[in-house]
Image (spheres, rainbow, N blue to C red):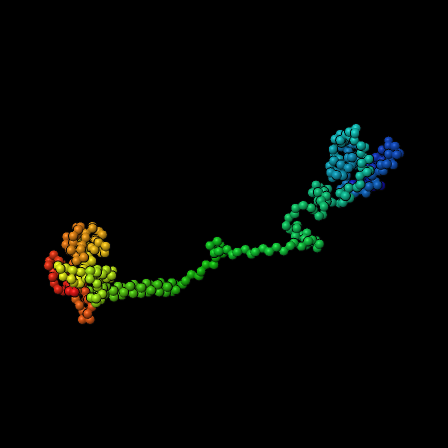
Length: 341
Ligand code: FES
């Protein structure tokens, strides 16, 4: 006889089956009984050692369903009235048949508490398929030696961040200079600045000692022998360097070589020699001069001027630009302003 106080769920179930077995066996046919063996064939699962109530809420004897409910609910279901037991539909199969066909649930065979979390945990497969976390993947990879090794992919190293992109705390600050070093740096900078100012002042003083002088060609120069100038020729090659025409021409009926100043007597432009027209033509206002320098057209008020000319000791023609001669003043009759040929 089982002790009522220490009776476990399994014992209670066994006792209930025995009690119900007699009643149901009497009502069922022998064939049904053979087809549906009593649930004792299934392994009784010890749910716990908590004793179950021996009587129903109505004070009567516990049925199998109430005992099962009490076992599942830890005995609380025993207090429920038997009216709440779901009434089987006509189409439903007898309760004893699926109970006999179903194998014993693994949950009932374990001694773990039968809460939802434990049921779900036991229902999960040990190797869960699908996405998993990094830690799970690492654990699985370590535990599974047959796992395929990952292909080695070359990953270039990350470039070093420039200093301006680094946080201020990560950038090493330069050690602050001491007071002596700062003073020495200030004095050194001041010394170099003072030296630069003194050097500039010295250069300016030296340049002041040498006044600005415009370098001009000498006022006296030789242009060659008289034979180099053919009669009636106007030599223009000395214009760029000396600004003078050397003419082997004629003035007042006398053939002579003279040097004409290449400055228009109107406003100072440089006329051009026109060989075809045998005249000097000023491009500014159109003044015209004959070969001997006499003005004949345009606004020029007077003839061109002559330079002093003479034969040097070596027989060459020497021109002196420091002396000029004006025709309107009768100076062209001065023998120092022509060479007779
Ligand atoms: Fe020569 Fe006026 S400057 S014509």
